[in-house]
Length: 197
Length: 197
DNA sequence: GACGACATGTAATTTGTTACATGATTGC
DNA sequence: GCAATCATGTAACAAATTACATGTCGTC
Image 1 (tube, rainbow over the protein chains, first blue to last red):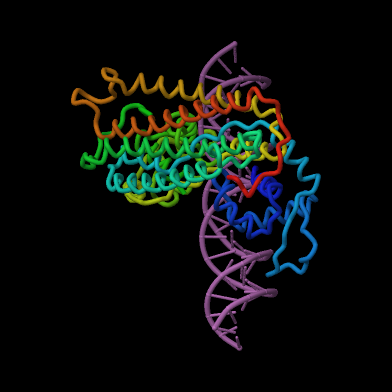
Image 2 (image 1 turned 90 degrees about the horizontal axis):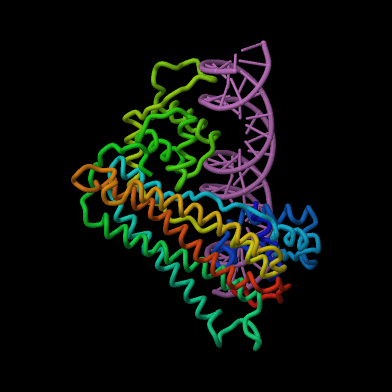
């Protein structure tokens, strides 16, 4: 249940309207926590009702009119508490890996094309991340002041590097997978031994 | 919507009862597609009603009695079609990364402990995977016959290596993250620049 | 016959997805 | 006034999570 905390974080970084949040969840925030505008509006409603955020004056009448939110002390407290919480890493759930495992059973027809497609997507994402890194986190382009990077800068850079490392891992793995399957013709494959893994 | 296909794959590899499937989803299958027993029973019901699998004779009366399923031709056809489908990689959604980003805003209190905990978990998972690799996929211990690995073996090995690469990536990233945050005292952190990333 | 392990299931809730509905503002 | 865009929202559904309920079987 992290969506409300993602929104609180985003709003603390900068007060925003629902649509602005939606856009930020397509870039920055969305790189590690994705959400659609429907989820965001629903959650904004809840957070407002529970007194964790409030709409800035100016716009009341709702529909069609922009409505900006800011975080209240209760919201900041909620987020602070959540940050020091514990939560195990979620088990992996990856359709592409499942497809490969299924392909081992019913035949790998068309798989190489899909691998190539994913490779291109991950390469593009990697390039986007490294561009951001070059822009925001290299010596001289530091977001921070003359004292070098702050603790906050270092944390944000670490998060970005997780994204970079992940994309790099997929690019390398997909390249290797293509080397091994791309050339071979799709074989029907024999029934497996005991589970194999 | 991959759960039914995960189940079809598992049942093709070996006919099983609901509980057996649940156990296999805690190992092998679960390494790339996790599911709880409630999900599995519900989905088994649907697959049976839609004529994709059927219960082996022997056990009818239901509750408490073991019930084994096998895949029918319609099920195999469904899976074969699904394997050649296309699906974009899902955007990342990682609570730990979100926590770090939030920590950059409200302070990184207690974060290093959580990083150490995750590091230990990922190291254990990595060890489990490399054990399996050594057991099932090294020369001499090959699952396959004397002709060397089959296409199916190669695919299963690739899936396992994705797991290994992923865990290794996290182990390395978490080690680096600890080097950078573990020593520093938790700082309150200044308000961010424009989104930063 | 009571207990624990095995086994199958129901119910309620929350979260995420997809499709659609409606109002406001701006430029032509 | 009309179309395009910005902006907020509703509704219906699908999937996942959590908690609980029930039945069978072996064994002590």
